[in-house]
Image (cartoon, rainbow, N blue to C red; front, side, top):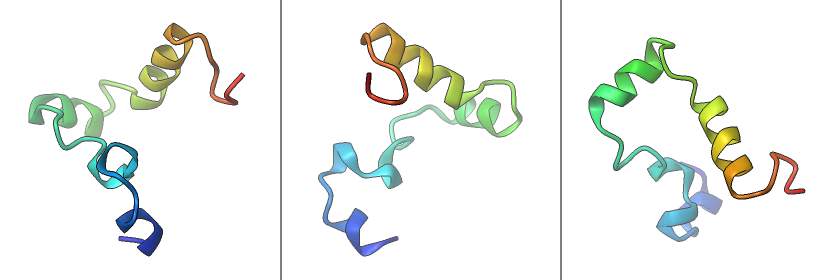
Length: 54
């Protein structure tokens, strides 16, 4: 773990991004059945922003 990440609050620390994700979903991501990048982009779009924060 990088020192900068150790100083981040948990909700901003990427080491914890999947800590509450069910194992079956993680397995599907690992096998390529679920695209976490596409899901993140979809969530951002739902919040009215893109991956460039616009």
